[in-house]
Image (cartoon, rainbow, N blue to C red):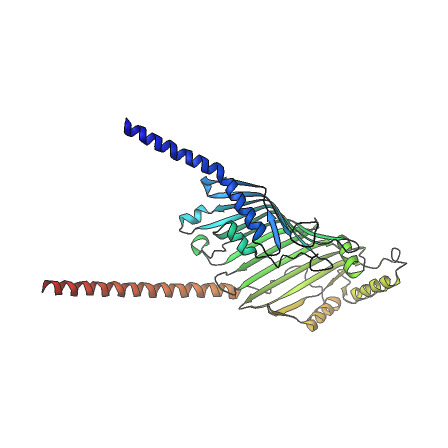
Length: 395
């Protein structure tokens, strides 16, 4: 009975310690996260409101994340997220890989263009990778964005500008290069969104993160953006006005070894820029709009009522190059010969990416083969040494 009594006391004490630790853990994690966000991000400070701990699935969630720029007194945060969920990926753990997933709910990022560096907000000063590692020190294999927003804003221009890409839903997978989990070494980012609640945005990016300068393949499309929705931006930055029309943008890029090639294809349909009634007291603005209208008329395909060109882009990431002559020729071809197809061309593929993956697999097979051969030789030498030692002892 005494032994049972002691065992019961030990069990009760252990359970009590676990309960107390569980109750205290959210406060400890909240304090640590706030200290990290307040002190460890260059040029920015942050905070969270609440922490939930889910021990049974190896996860925790933070609520009310907000990150602000320290200087400039900007009216919006750089980052605001309702909820971020960090969790261990159990299927990956069963395959021998300790990796994690991050899921964000209603994240919002605000880029701000201001009259000075202090009143602008780009995020380029922050050490964001180190911050994420401090908050969750595991390799991130999957990132999910649910209902995100990205805003470009200018609070000092006339008029004020706020261009939003919203309803962002994006999934990034296989960023720990764990071939066991996905069957290949290519990571992917796929997402959809809307621009100004109306334009359709699609993104498809594939890359091989195993390499220092990873090969990649990018497809991007933006369709059906009403130009009138961009008028605040056009008036603030170009002093022009759009009465009607739609805007689209298509791009394909591929690259490796810090080099890339591809194209950007903007497309304007049913455009009307000049508004003499509203701008009759602004002769310089009228002349500018008339000039833009004349250029549009020159490069317009009248049968389809669209203005388009295809801009070849190539070079290194440190020195991108745009082929201006080919751009002009493409615009003239659109005007006088044929309308540029308002879709992705499919002319830029990821053959090199797939080829590199095959080469990497072959290289790894050869490396593993050499490792097995070396281990066999080592074991053979060990056995030989033991036999010789045995013979010497027998003597």
